[in-house]
Image (cartoon, rainbow, N blue to C red):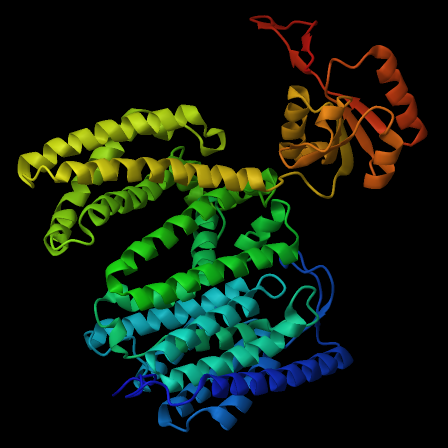
Length: 623
């Protein structure tokens, strides 16, 4: 049976304004239907109250999926072609809506929802939806099943913060439209435009602060339709299974990444993968200091970036596709490494979960799991770097076709040589949080020795051309950049966000020198202190308005009252030993009059012998 979303014989017969009109009309219909649903839900008391396992903090109306479904049905009736395949898609979408609605009302078991999703995937395949007819039918069938279940559940899991799932769906739908339109697929382009309009109308009420939630009846519909929109027999996907999955995976990179990230981190943290919680990508971005809206916008930006990569790679061609996909995967893995270090659950809760789920103790406490993750990152990075050596040397020459097989044969030896070498130089004994020039020197030395070892292997058994020396030199530079850049990116992400709790006492640090920097780091990393640093005070006017680790020096001597009132300060931490005694007393008197607590930071070195702790610690003050 032919696929449902095949390209037309010529370029799309409809002009771009026709699609825009359809999207705008469906947007208006969805907007009205969502508003109506919200009014009815308020009148009937159909609201979602805050719960411990949910993110929202106020009662919000439910069943926004009615607005999405209504907009889709209006669009299908008014603009979509009347075919048997699209009739089947409409009926299956209604079925997925019904399953989601039952889950919203009664709470279906995970097994029941999985069976329903599998059945929808089977029926979708029978109706003519394929990844590619050139594949063996069994492979194509199981890819379709996996894709439908994975994307439906990914969008359901992504619906964890106001506007996140709906916004990502709109972005993915827009790029899906661009790919279909560029390919001349009128049916696919029109369905994508209808989808964008329907979800966009709902997003108006769902964006932060949301006044209505889509519920499972909405997330199941948008997840199922996004999966279906990426099923086609277009020959642009006829090269290989990797190529078939590449563009849809890039368009839907954020929901796929979030699902994979949450599953892996929960497994390593001793939590059930199926258990809900505030540990998604969006929640961790909020935990490092972003507002909910900022966290959602960051994920929007990443989704737009991955969609742009998908579109550009489609236009450029398949020869660069795996390279671009590898770069995207590398970037998301680095993002995941950073986010995995953000604490979203108390240590006591994690310890209790270890006792409740003993089967996870081994991977959870496995001491080298972070180093193993960096090895995976470096395998990707070094493979890309080695490929860059060949690409820069032969990419625009007649020798390129003969060099690609050489790259394929020798890449495993190159990556293995480099990994062994950098490991021997201690790269994996360093933590990315302390990444500095010292680690860069280790990387340069390790890559140099690794490339030299690979040169012996290369010229000994694979190549005789002296021109390969330039390829290895280029690969050496790319490998150094790959290893240092990966660690630098994660370190930069860590330094870019503020880890301290925004719910703590608003605090000033007196002294913007080394002691102030030490105090800032301690207050940010120690949640038990309950202090949120809003600025520095320093008597050196040359430091005023300077920024130290993202915190501004807001004033100095004699300006405490002004600064305290402007920033609603509740505490001051004295972090310098240079302040004169008289000045310290004046600060304490002024702070007392303003009702501000004053603290003095110091480090104690307490000597210990075999009889216990000595009674007189040595206090070290910081300047």
